Amino acid sequence: MVDEDLNQVCDTARSIFEAACGGSQSRALVEQASSSRDLWDILSQAGWLGIALPRNFRQAGLGMAGLAVLAEEAGRFSVTAPLLSTAGFFVPMVLSAAGERSCYDLLKPVLNHGHPAAVAFGEGFARGGPGRTLPSWDGQRLVGVTRQVQDAQLADLLAVVAMTDSGEMALAIVDTSCDGVVIEPCFGADPTRPLANVHLDIEIDQDHVIAGDLGMGLRFSTLALAAEMVGIAQRCVEMSAEHAVNRVQFGRPIGSFQGIKHRITNDMIATEQARSLVHAAAMILDEGDKSDLANQQRAVSMAKAMAGDAARAAALSSVQVHGALAMSWEYPVHLHLRRAWQDSELLGGSIMHYETIARLEVGKNRGGL
Image (cartoon, rainbow, N blue to C red; front, side, top):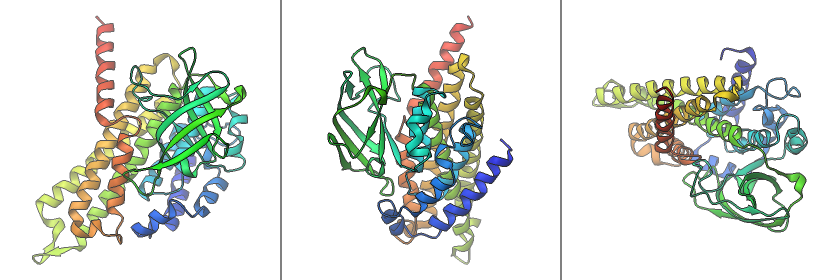
């Protein structure tokens, strides 16, 4: 993972995010989620919206390794711009469905003009099998509802996972300003990352519906979420350690108490383990061995499950270390906890991914008998 390009992305992103969000109070971060586009313009001009594309793809991509680095830094600073939805979800899903040769025309509005985008994954899509609830496409009309779509209110384009009449999944690219697209805000744990129910009853051109494989895009999107949660966990560990050194009780820093010290140490270890799994999975995805999709899914599920557990634990520890201060609008610790809760359940919670790993291991062992 040591790469000059990746180091440059890390350093530049940290500088940009720290300037835009590093000193913000919680209330300011919530307000930024629905107002300021200054940060978005910077991200677009930096060329990072297409960072998930393969290396050297029209001089835009750094693959999953680049996306993981960028998402982790965004997680550290609770970035409110729809970066994850656009660069981490939309671009990989379109690439997966259309293929490297055909995706560029569909991605032009994002890559060339900086339009924010989002993905309507649909209920149960990450889980697969029975229980999926997706809009339907009959060759002309796209009809249905997708619930809890991240950043739908901020998006100009929406990639909708839909079911065709033949029972296959397809990806429909929708302009959110069109008649027949109704975006209804709904409750989410994280007020800096809005969710919405998307109601669709719209005619859509066949050129904007891609009936390709969505598996690679789902794995990229899931791993991008894991990388962001590593950033959340890292920032919470840093904030806990800083507060534990500076907060004095009974004449000594609270960080000297074993209960505090050991908890922060455990969170730090879990964060490093999750980061290692994310980086390992990113390398596996970038190698692109399509003959071993089970190994790709195993690596992604391990990273997502571990990162979700680490982020939730570190954020909860940070709230407890900070005490009542953590719940005030002057301090963003509680927002990290809210984002960790929301991220950890999106595209499958830890339990689902541990079950996926178990099924893959059982299948591998049976195959060897």
